[in-house]
Amino acid sequence: MPADPQRDQAKRAGRALDAANFFLADVRQGLGPYLAIYLLTEQKWDEARIGIVMSVATIAGILAQTPAGALVDAVRAKRLAMAGAALIVTVTSLLLPLLPSFWPVAISQGIANAAEVVFPPALAAVSLGVVGHSAFTARIGRNETFNHAGNAVAAAVAGVAAYGFGPQVVFYLLGMMSVASLVSLLAIPERVIDHDLARGLDGDGGDADARRESEQPSGFTILLTCRPLLVFAVCVLLFHLANAAMLPLVGQKLALQDRNLGTSLMSACITAAQIVMVPVAMLVGARADRWGHKRFFLAALLILPVRGALYTVSDAKAWLVGVQLMDGIGAGIFGAILPVIVADLMRNTGRFNVAQGAVITAQNIGAALSTTLAGLVVVNFGYSAAFLALGAVAAIGAAVCWLALPETRGPAAADPGRSRQTAPPASGIAAE
Image (tube, rainbow, N blue to C red; front, top):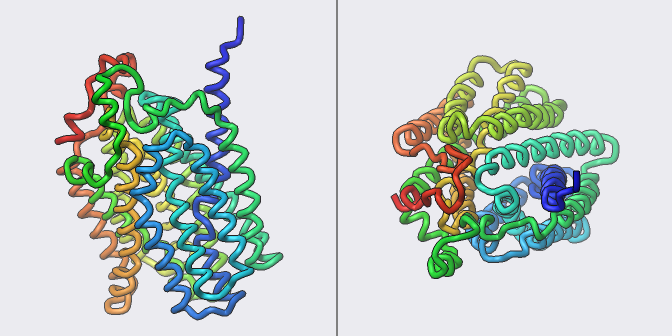
């Protein structure tokens, strides 16, 4: 039987996406939590200066997120955009030991965080452009599976290597992962990416004037006119307002009990949660179209109040680490379902990636506020009250999701046999 070049290229693109998600797992987070450890232990910075640098980096990421989505919508060189972002993250991180004073570190980490925000919308866009709407949920589930596997491997390798060679080893690990991610990204065949699909259009057919009009992305307009997207953004903000501070609080409780084991136990929490996220992401990819996208997202929100309540039961190390495994369920669902729901809402609008950027901006705002809220509650009322308060925030998010967010499965997911031309547009949802 003769080989099908198109099918072979599609398979090659799928394998390259697997590899890109695996290797970018470390690059897209930059130095992450290792930055604070390095500055504290190796450069002897005080906690106040470290906090300011981390805040600068966070603010830079928030400000860049929606424009990054608009950029991904606008450009066809999406692989090169990700490759460029990977190089920026790596170079700014590798320069850090050479320029360890305050302003170079603050500026370099702000630039790195601004570059990192390109990865989520660009990976989702390329995935949609390769597989189309009907296979998008499964592809995103696979993306997240390899992403979490990459995070788990990178965290484990970093933990072992740092124990033997010191915190600076994370710079070399990041560089190696960056090179591997560049090779993987460039291995995706450019010709298999449908760039109309990649921005949420159907990719063929339709009115030419309408198609030209759709080529002007605008995230702010979408947020103000698409009620379901606005509801979803609020739910996402509440999810991260509840979730982001839980792991740091657990780490603080563990460190207060045993300062020597605090870092090791924190690494165990992160690695174990990432391992749990792998099968969860696979489940979302395999079943979300059948069981409902909203139902999965609602489940991710409902896990958080349970998790927050369980943290108050015991301070035993094994109990806290065990409960933290539930983070793998909630975060595993969330990472896999977010781009799927946005793609549902933005179908045929040409605004998929800028909408992703806007929703992820809401996510980052929630995460930034989470630690502040938790810290204030801990100081005034204790750790148990903080966990319960965070759980209550998630419960509010679940109520908003249940009452106000419609089920978002598009017509292609409900009936994969329908063609792009005959499937009605999602404008009824997008403009609701």
